Image 1 (tube, protein in one colour):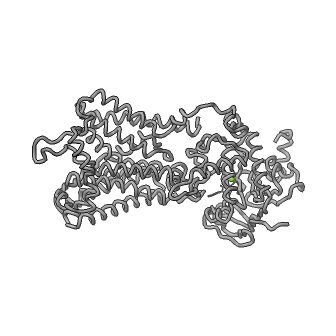
Image 2: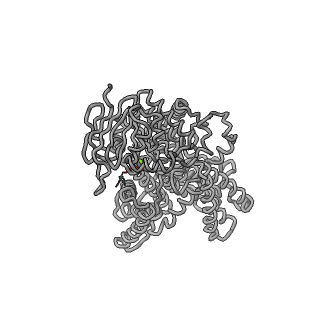
Image 3: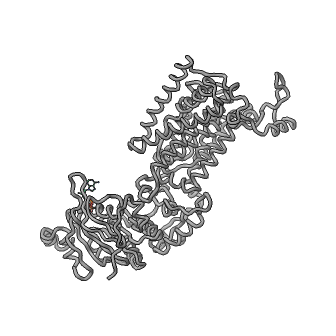
Length: 381
Length: 255
Ligand SMILES: Nc1ncnc2c1ncn2[C@@H]1O[C@H](COP(=O)(O)OP(=O)(O)OP(=O)(O)O)[C@@H](O)[C@H]1O
Ligand SMILES: [Mg+2]
């Protein structure tokens, strides 16, 4: 018989806080193994870095903050879905294509075919979440890796995204969305600036600049908090609460941690996974809506590479690629790092291609750190 | 004598051409520990999986508290009161003890999990089993094998199991951890739960068993009550008699 009673039986025998077999580690270690650690350290690091490098470039005045906040918020929206899906043990590589597809779908229904914008939006959500469900059903029924299944949909969706407007309208960019969405209540949910009074007041007391020329002279340069940022915050908060506080969240962790074990205790594994694929699709569609109404157009090449950016933000945020562990707040911090670095390089006037180099390097670091943290939590040697 | 809680009659199970079980009868009563012994591949795991709703028997009857049952899923069996601690444990190493303990039946307060209740119940149930957890947030991955077994057992008992099936709970454990798990089994039995204890270690079986059934190549070789059979006879039965006696001779009685 192998004797594995030698190293790890401590708490069984004596137990309690006074067990001589348990090293006193205190709160520090507890804190060190939180999934958000990498994200928090990263955020502090990038702020110090760009504070020094680009501190006087306007990156940290009201307009600059609004600039990288919006970019970060975009990343956050898709990172929330990707994070919860990764915790459930799966990937979705079709997110980027889904963004392009959803944008074109809104434009086709809402502009080309002239349906009310809110109908176009709802139909698009239904179609995209349906595609998410198909992804999920194929993954759970066939047992194939989600990597392959969603890679297939990366191509399928992108193909349709180009084919449909090309065939119907003979072009792949569709404009006129702003006019079509005029006064539409649901479009406004994705494209309104909130709390304009706050910024007018901030302009009055001189904190926010005002336009000095043009049609909007005298108005503050920031007209309000964009719905994009509101969506990002709401999704992060809901995602975080669901994941850490609810029964369903417990099941998401379980499904990614060990699907068979979860099944044994009665967790509806397949249903949880399918719902997570649909959630990811939902987030991608929210992203597409915000983008389409901001730009006033949809284009078939939107969203390319977004799936990888989402996954990287999630991994920087401390999630394990193998599933069962991760944090929505961490993923949001990962997205913030992304936004700050991407725009920071711009403010610091550094060649923007270096952003890719940065992504690769930080991804490697994050994965190595996470693997190490995993060993600590599970006591693996 | 009391009626059995579960009675399995003439169970067979075929996997395609493989005949894993070929007519096995077995029962377990409240408050007893019925040991199921047999060599590797004898069909022990397959047998208890039919009892816990994982496999449907090819033929044979399952009676639960006198009624004929047809479990469609592990969930059905669990609801009836048959809890199983599998060889591979059904624990999720990255998750905390509390989250594992309550998995699938999390207590709720409004929309959210009631963590106060979940944590304090987990701590006190584990204490009853003789384990003082450092913290209910501790990941199961950091527990020892014996501790994990105990969490799984405590969970089954807490959720009102009438029959507790343990598939080789001691096979990977050291001496001291084994005796702890055996002590837990004893405690569970005394609380009136029927325990099905699977092992191929005769000494472990003898330590807690009230009755012993030996499986060999998918068939029962018979059931004996405590005191009717010696450990040597049991050992011989498991190995199919003859050869083992000879082997034992040449090894000088060390097996
Ligand atoms: N799903 C299956 N498909 C085909 N054959 C199976 C299946 N499950 C079990 N068997 C076969 O049934 C027989 C009994 O296996 P089982 O796992 O029940 O043995 P066991 O007594 O639990 O052995 P051990 O002591 O090694 O755990 C073996 O020959 C095995 O190969
Ligand atoms: Mg077995």
